Length: 101
Image 1 (tube, one colour):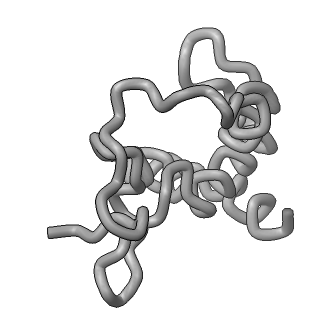
Image 2: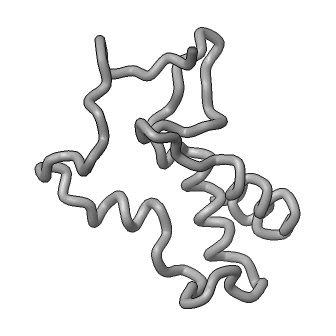
C-alpha cells in the first residue's frame, strides 16, 4: 500500500510502468523476468501495484470510462473464473513456466 501511494504521486513513472508491464501472446509479462529468463505470469505484481497506484491517484482517469478504484487488475483477477478453459491461449510447455528465447 505504501509503495502504491508513493507511485501514485509520480505520474510519469506510473504511466511508464503501466505501459511497459503488458502481456505477451502467451499471457506473460513482457518486462518481468528473473535471472534465468523465466517470465512472470500477467498481471505481474508490478502491474498490480501500478493499477492500485492509478486508483489512488488524484489525476483524472486516463481512458474513457475509467473510474479511479474500479476495474483494477487485482479485482479482475479475483473475479475471473479459474475453472473456465483458457481462451485462445496456448498451453505452456514443460513445467508451466515461460522462458524467453
